[in-house]
Each structure stands twice: as structure tokens, then as C-alpha cells.
Length: 322
Length: 231
Image 1 (tube, rainbow over the protein chains, first blue to last red):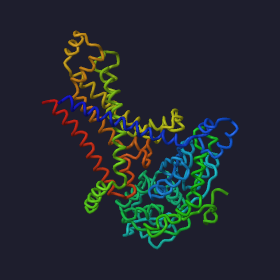
Image 2 (image 1 turned 90 degrees about the horizontal axis):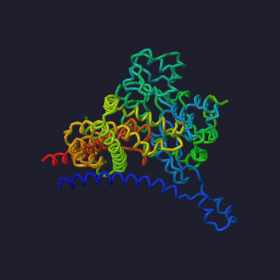
Image 3 (image 1 turned 180 degrees about the vertical axis):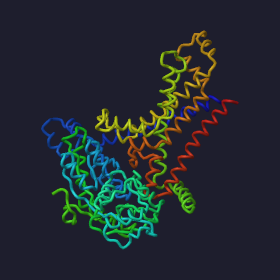
Image 4 (image 1 turned 120 degrees about the vertical axis):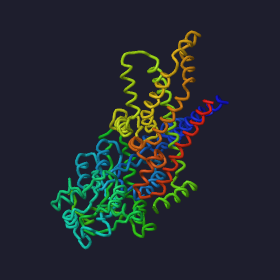
């Protein structure tokens, strides 16, 4: 009896191990689904027919495409809609790594990603100049909003210029939560403080969460603090927040997302065709029309405006790209 | 308070309906952590046996290293494994980063010192005369190890419990080396973090409840076995 129980336990553990093995079999199965040129040429009796059959053959090479992106594209749920479509269309398996834009660009810079979907023009320029980011294209935009508690302790409401609003918060010493994670939002916020000639670092009311947009919004909400957020994430998580928009519409708060491929010539392991396919997909008519309507059913307004083919100037933005 | 009650109610609804793919996430958590514990059981029992029975120089240092390792910070392990497995890292060509295999590797590193420490302690508490007697009876080494492990099976079960608990509730390493990919490397702990950052507290609560129940069930089974053995 005793031994039987112990044996059962061991069997259960072994079984779970076997299941793991099965699940990893899935991976290899997927690979065999797409026979590459090698398989097709084998099946042709003579070499003559081979070129004809191998032209429409699906591409060989790695199937995984690593997309380094910002937390906002994940927290809003946009990529949950777009990625499965792309996977179905292309046969690639997408791995979305949602981090801050700073980290996403760093991943690209090391060749740890195949394609980047980011929103920090000035930092993007650096990556493009280094020759690491190639074929950069605008995908969409929304804007940043300044959120605060409805009591508005710093009296920001009514202000139209972002730097003025920050100055009021600074003067009052009202609680402010910053991402502090070198993300696109964080970079913009830091740039605004700089533009206002103020340095909030080290002030007791100024805190850095070091986390993504969604998580930081929760913190600001708990603290009744002001916070800079992209509109998409704010709308997507609004129902759980008591923060309200205290400032919006400053042209300096435009938030433009672009996609760029990691240069496959620079890194051996980068999946060039896969990265290009994903970037192309993001600016395709299909993806752009989904972006255009994304969020309308749920939030009553679209979270992003599609921008494929546009330039920074057309968005009314000063471009670092000349 | 509303948040808690609404969250709980909705969490129970989610568990019933299986929304937010909670069950596939749960299964994945079990598979990843289960594999990690199995591997660390093999490694840890062997290492623990060596530490308990072999007399060699530096054993004391090794033992204290293992004991330190029992509290290995998961994020540090995650970072180490990530640096190794990133494409820019020395093992990048294996293309293992952001796969369940990478998570199993990280959790194995976290669980192995725990199992080793428990095993070493358990075996050292056995009556030394047992081994002498076994040798006298002409037992081969593997036979002896088997008998000795069988004698120490209760503390070894504790090792499994502790290792499994450490592996399945760990989040830092899983996030870093797994990437929290939906349908691939998203496990209970990482999805709790994601849902909270999305402001979706109900699924976060549901997933946390499942995590707790899971740890409870595994420990309950193992404890029951222990109790039965003792009678």
C-alpha cells in the first residue's frame, strides 16, 4: 500500500515530464509542416524540374521573430490582435518582448531582437545612425496626456502648455510618479522637465516606479499623483483608475510609433526576412485598418491613428531625422 | 473593499469558465516547474549524497555554498541565464531565449540547491551504521544509495516540496528568460504581473488563487504520503 502510493507519485511526476516532451514535440512538428527546398528537391526525380518547384516554396531559416516593443502596445491589447493575424498570414512565430523603448532599442542594438516597434524619435535616430536600425517607418500615433487626481491640487486644469503644467506641479510640490525606466514616455517626460528648466530629481514628491505604463498608472492612482501617460494605455485601463486628464492637446505631446528592422548584416543570428515581414505587415493596409478601429468598440474612440506612409512633418512634429 | 469582493466573485467566474486561458497557463506552470523539479531532484540527490557521504577537502565550504544557494535570488538567476542565452550571449546560437526550456533551466538552477541542501541534511541524519551494514552485506554502490535514499524518503519529499514551491512561485527569472509570451512562456506568476499592470484585477486574483491552490494540493499530496509512511 505504502509503496503503491509512492509509486503513483513517481509515475505522476514522470508523466508530467513526458508531457513536457510532447509539448516540445509540437515545436518540431511546426517546423516539419513547412518543408523547405531540401525536401522538395528530394522529391523531384531529376534536377531539371527542381527550380520550377522550389520557387514558390516557403522560405527556410528561423521561424521565430522577436519583436522588441514598448509596454503600451501590449498593455492596450493592440498586439494581441495584430500578432495572431501576422502569424497566420506569414507562418512566422512572433515573440513579443514588451519592455520600455530604451530597453527595446538596446535589444535591437545587441541583435537580441529582429524588429523594433518603438516611440522615441530622438533615441531611434541614434540606432538608425549606427546602422543597426534600418528601414524605419511611421506606423501610428496617439498623444500623451497629463493625468492627475480630480481634486487637481496643483491647479493644472485649464493650462494648455505642458511645461507650464509641470512648473505648477513643481511649485506646489504635488505628488508626481514617473516611469523612470527610460521608456519612450519616460524620455518625453524628462525632455519636458528639461524644457521647463526644472529638475524634479531628488524632490520628495517626485517618484520613479521603474515599471511599465500600466503598472505605473496603478501606482499614481494609489498615490493620487500626477503622471504622464500615453492616451492608449490610459483609455485601456481607465475603468480601474480614478485619475482624470488635466492637460491634453499640446502639440509637443504627440506620440509617434515607428517600426524598424534590425540590420541582419550586423548580427549573424538576426532573422532578417522575419523582421522585414513583420515591419511590412505593420504598415500594410490590413494592419493599418485594424489600428484605425482598434478600441472604438470598447472605449468609444480609437486608441491610435494609423500613419503608414506619412512623415513627421505631416504629423506636425519636428523631426530629428532631417 | 469592493475591489476585493468584486475581484473574488469575478475570479471564481473566470476559474469556472476558463477565461483568460487560465487553465492552459496553469498547465504550463505545472509542466515547467514540474520538469525543473524533476531535473533538480536527480542533480540535487546525487550532489547531496556526495556531500553527505564523501569526505573531501572543501566539503565544508561547498556545504555552506549550497546552503547559501537555497536562498538564491530568482532575479539574479534569471539575469545570469538571460545573459548566457541572449543571442548576443555565449549560448545565443542555441536560440533558447524566450522558450519554456530556458525557464526550466532557470528554475532548475533555483531548485537544485534547495534539493541538494535538504538531501545532504537528510542523509547525514541517517544512522551511519546502516551504511556499514550494507557494505558488510556486499551491496554495490548504486544498491546502497538506493536503500539509503529509500530510508530517507520522508525528508526527500520535503526537498521536492520546497523545490517545487520555490520554482512555481518564482517570477523574476521566468519573466526575464521567458518573456511572458502568450501561449508559450506565460505562466501563473508572470500573467499575474501582466494583468495587474493592465488594471485587470479579477483575472490577477483568479490566477493567484489557482497558484495558491496548486501549491496547496501538491503539498497536501506529499504530506499525506509522508503521514502514511509514518504510520
